[in-house]
Image 1 (cartoon, rainbow, N blue to C red):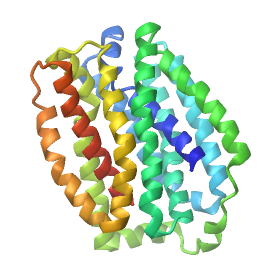
Image 2 (image 1 turned 60 degrees about the vertical axis):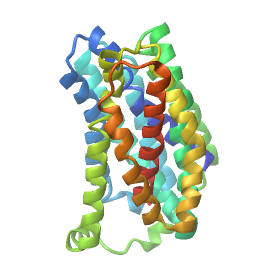
Image 3 (image 1 turned 120 degrees about the vertical axis):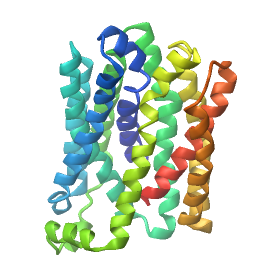
Image 4 (image 1 turned 90 degrees about the vertical axis):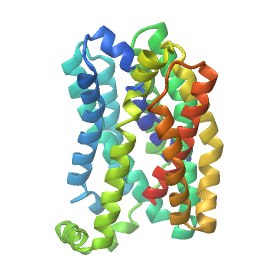
Length: 313
């Protein structure tokens, strides 16, 4: 779990760091918000498309090998981002990083599904999502400091070097995971057909799609909005991730245990309802002191993180 969380940590930092770098990238590369949003979306779309393609064959292989191959591609994509000389090169590098990062992240979730029984899966997911908290409280602020002190290339070099070290540890210590191979009896095409014919699965996938659409209509533009509309400086952006991520270090495991105790749907319903308040506030902020901004953004971090990983179960 520690190595899986470490892999997830680098994947999340690589994805998240692009969003607070928005003001700097738009200024340096002279791109508009639409072009910046394409940089964020390119990672997500390539991850989704590649994961869908990979679903047809990855279950036939040792999950350790799939994770290592996917992670190696992710590392190469991250270093390509670090070396990008212009917008179009960076866009292609983000697509490559997303392709392999998405497959790796999906395999981590599959491993948890294989290894942990349903009644303990909430606790395991809470531990895994702790990597999101650490990425927010340590990875993203550190990346922003590197970007402010050196250049926007520095955070990707930082993530790339860290990923190489984690890859070596995963190669040595992650055990072979092959039990699922003997359970693969149906063709992947039939599985997809079954999903299409099952109303419950269709609704579940639609729910996840709508949730992600809602979240990422807001999240990529938090940093530019805070700088342009609320009046924060680029250096102050790190406090949003430092405080919000720090709180979710404690809230995510608690939510996971609570879900195992009182029911996953009940916890999801509570948090998705509570999310209405910070979503309304964070999209309508006027110039405010940093302390007041942190209250709102931290509320958003806690409830949005909780509702998302309840879905993944």
